[in-house]
Length: 211
Image 1 (cartoon, rainbow, N blue to C red):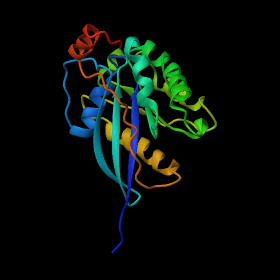
Image 2: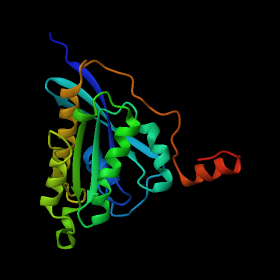
Image 3: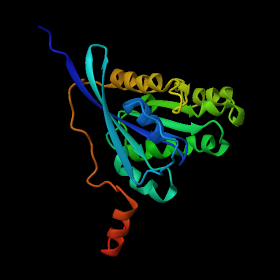
Image 4: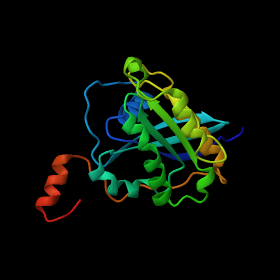
């Protein structure tokens, strides 16, 4: 009886605040969507198991805060990542323009072994708001094609309507599996701290800590 190989992958989701990072993660893992916006404080993660090339893959998906005041915390969560999903909102030109900054910051802080071949996927979210589109699909594709010798896969999704969400995450996972030299389980690179709530942050300030 053959034993299936097990792989643990860490996937980090980056993008400006409000582009739908948390909604995408919740839709993919839990098949749930909430229209109530709640900003991520620090970072959070969910896990999901999938089968890829006869391997049982556990995806550890990290949702990081998009607000500038939390970006310094994000550095601790980039380390050890196997793939990175960059998200923008098709109704927001600014969120699209920030993709380059997010990608550059990630490569600078994650200390990846081979930046040129690292597994990136770009998502243009909120296609359910097509009438308000400000970023043409062609522009998104052009950006992805200009980021190196190999184009970055580009998906336009709707977390609300569950449009192409699974396809985008599976693409990131498959790329990461292909790039792994040793498909054996590894210890997840989990930071020593996670800012879970505004209340926790406030309590830490009262105790003389800094965030």
